[in-house]
Image 1 (tube, one colour):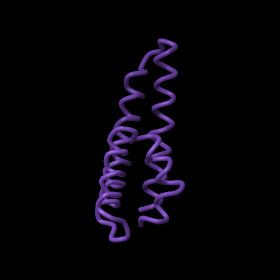
Image 2 (cartoon, rainbow, N blue to C red):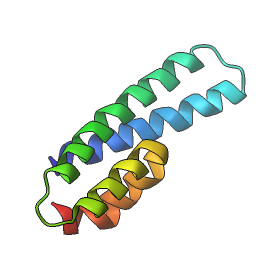
Image 3 (cartoon, helix red, strand yellow):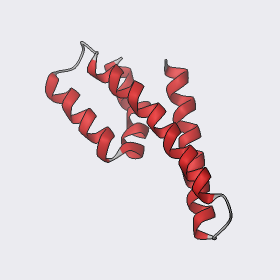
Length: 90
């Protein structure tokens, strides 16, 4: 599961940044690249939230905090989750 989360986060990060740069430069297919990035981000967020919600190591309040953070601050929260939080949760 860890490898899947790392790969989907890297793909979403790369395609979102590339799509945003292409959009700024008014290049063709920028919307398609951004769409791929957003789909990959959703493919990262759903398993990460599932992993958090089923973890017996953290309290309900912390599970709710992680879920809300993933919904509103998805890229930043994903980075913090992969680098620091996952070791304690999973």
